[in-house]
Length: 123
Image (cartoon, rainbow, N blue to C red; front, side):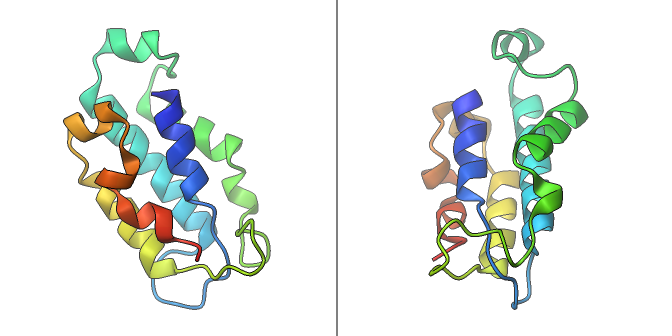
């Protein structure tokens, strides 16, 4: 499960926002919240503990936000590759796809299949 979180947030690396949709910081925070919501909806308390997740969904989101430095993301530093362009509308689609992810998709760890927009935020 930790791999699922890391993979999802890695895909969220954002860049300049000049479109409708989510700004880089908002995208990072929204993805953390959406992913933790699905994790805590789909996994049992035993599975959460075995996976090393925090006690609550809110703590999960806060931990991911800290690890990903969501509060520091803006249009100047969000994309890893300076030649890539951030797509705010795609970031918003990514969050919506994570929110709509089934428990089976979450358990499979196939973020690309369940939330393909997450892989196209910076292109």
